[in-house]
Image 1 (tube, rainbow, N blue to C red):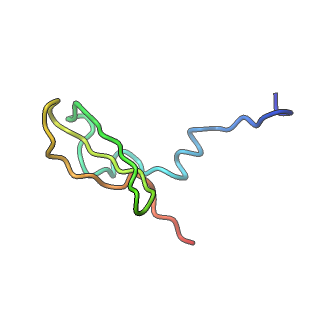
Image 2: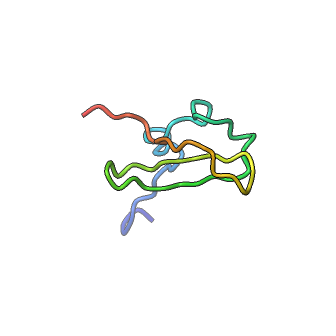
Length: 69
């Protein structure tokens, strides 16, 4: 282990990239369905939470943190 590949701490890596769930634009505990989509223009991952299985009313927003370049 460690010679052919590196083992990463994925929780730490996700904290550096993804927003915390408490700052999302919908309440995760009230959602029954989640939709993930990659934006073609910005190449970001967009997420939408739906309160019911057969609805399409949620707003897609970016789940990644804003990075300063």
